[in-house]
Length: 309
Image (cartoon, rainbow, N blue to C red; front, top):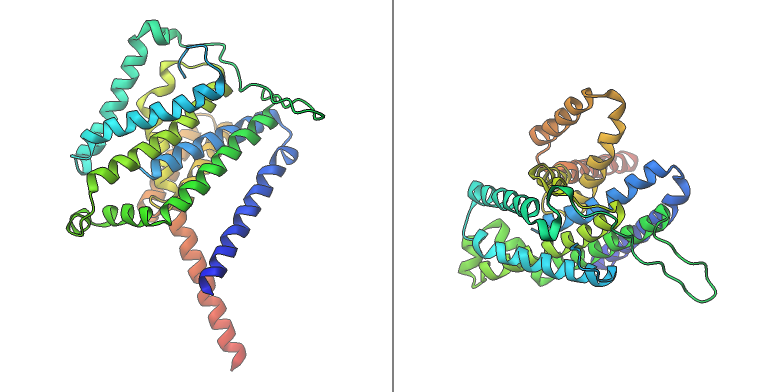
């Protein structure tokens, strides 16, 4: 019975999120903030992909979208074959080194990326024309938000089911104690490669939407600071929680925009906020939410006991 109640509660929250996604473009009419909503949805995909862990060919968007996911997943798995042999700081250094290599390749592979000039005039996803209904154009920011947010929500649901399945339990066991997991017969290397592949595929989907939304791709969009930003979203939200990186992505996308009126001071405020979270709330927003719920539970229990007396 308790399990059924938990499932009903989760389904209820998913329904609430779906309703919020549907209403946001009606509530927010300003094109600037609608643009930030789309960026939020893209960053959510990047963050949840990292938490579990478009080339100029003239192909249709949805084919490029699928290819982007497959190639990104394959690249992540290829990198993981070498990365899984590393631990701690060495793994972080290897990941950052790979980001630097990718940036240099994009900068110097002129025939593919046009180097520093980048790729321009990338079209949005094709319009959807259904009989008897208005044409859905993704040049419209509201429609683009619905598309990207729907995929972000879908990926979250899929990853949520994954981490709650036996596969998720296996990945958690590896995260908590790899030596003990190996002792129980778990092939840690294979499961790490799997996690790298899934996370990279989700990031590939986010990249496809980013290219079609911004309309241009330049090497500077893939500099190492972008990797730090996505990692910060995961840390601030709460690593290993899935819902935490969602809140982290929303916060760290919206917060710089809210602080933009402070000029250069916003960078100091932004950095101070991140530092305070890491120092005093290492579990991120997810930990803060758990502590808040626990206090509410204790308060409700104490109130109930007082009323009975």
